[in-house]
Image (cartoon, rainbow, N blue to C red):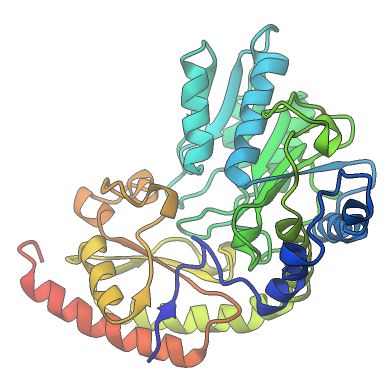
Length: 386
């Protein structure tokens, strides 16, 4: 069996069609799109087409803005820092509401603002691992400027009630941001029917290239730029755009939207097959109900098996999985989500995430099931606590 990649919440294979779409812009049509000569002019229609694909993919209106940037980390920081300089710094709005589930790029940015006098409320998930609209409502005050809640959790795949949370924010006159990195390509996204003001995404999470992403901003909402310089992106974000990446991201978004039904049927079926097999192992916990998770993700905890040890054995067998967020994978602390839902200390160190993609095959799942079964037996035989 060749190597198997089941860590698609960390990154994804660039779709071959996306790669082909990008190739001409490296050495044939390589002009700077801001140039006035033919080299620059000839690439502009492709960027317009890519932008149209992004707008269509998330249901944005023509009057809304999508700012092309390097990744969702940049987009998240643009929102958090932009809110500081536009509202939090010099008005009575002095607080942010977010969650303990967020990606490090949100939590770290918020902690930075705490050093500058901003009050940040971090909501802990309930026993089901979720954040509810009522939990958000209870923490919004007259000084709240922004609520930031991810659309789907990167560790567990659990889907959060963004529409209901957004309605609460709208009622209270508070800006709403959602990190949709784990939702694009897995769930239908239509910002025209969801009350969100800011939405961030990264191309490499939906079979596009690394190093490029986007920030959606609803009509009438403005933030100061995070990067200053030229007037690219209408002055919202300075720097020459990555033309191949932009084109690739647009096409990847189009393909992701077209493949949503396949994700919901075929990929979900493979995920469920893997999950059913894992649940037959004694003392296994799966976080979150299936219907409330993205169709590609299963996050398990196996009592008596350290997550890092299981990942090591899987890697030796050619299988890539994860203990959680790749952006925090060098930390060997207990899983934040397992700790939050009340798992005991031992169990909180055993979380492992398997995340599939539309390129995952049934043969790969069958092989993974057999390897996990054998590995659990081996590791438990060495455990002093099981």
